[in-house]
View (tube, rainbow, N blue to C red):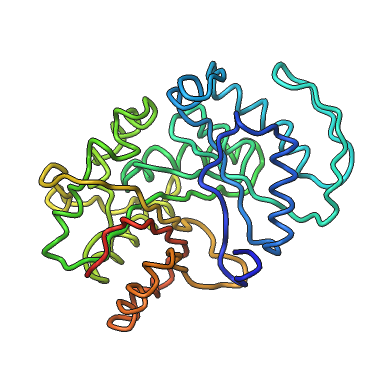
Length: 317
């Protein structure tokens, strides 16, 4: 995709750190960055205990500490060609870094809990979120990560919100919002950190963070997330969403796979640009028809981001 595109930002959201040594991760990231010509962002996460321990048989002890150790090596390796020499209680690395097509490589962390948000502010370029609604972003995520970055002398961090999107008739919104709660990745049963995050906002499941409907209500919801991300301590708070605007999540059942939308919440992308919708082949024709009916579906009026649509993403028929 890096060779086939010129403007959109590409990245991972997210790669578990336990499955790749930080030196190998740096080599892969720098190689991708060279192909993408500066448009690649590496998203990392500590994953979940039921993946790392139960499925892969690896240690999930003190995941935030694992992440700190990992970032010490990774950040040193991403600084450019030369020797990487880092020793901590997780790694003893003395390795050459020979990727010569070097360029700055942003790193974002999947950070929901306070400790991980502090790590993201101190040692990364920002955070990638899932199941964080507008209030959780404005009151929990942004203040913590911004404070950590400021104390570490780092630039204002990015906050990337994972938002499921369903472009559909307005009378189908409640049905879309209620699809597949028990099977949805990101519900409280899937991760303790997600459950704790839900207590910081108004959402109770994935249906409550859904941007759904025709172009206007979908754009309004995306702008609400954008405004929540722009809030900084001491600035005006975004308007809270009325409780009646939240979608019930138990009116329907069926398969659902999340479709995250990365919304740039801070500065615009270098050189400007617009949001891009990336779909697989069998959805492209449908997307083109929708765009032909309403061009604003693919022009998010200044909201920067990338939509990743899966085959079973609910779309208007």
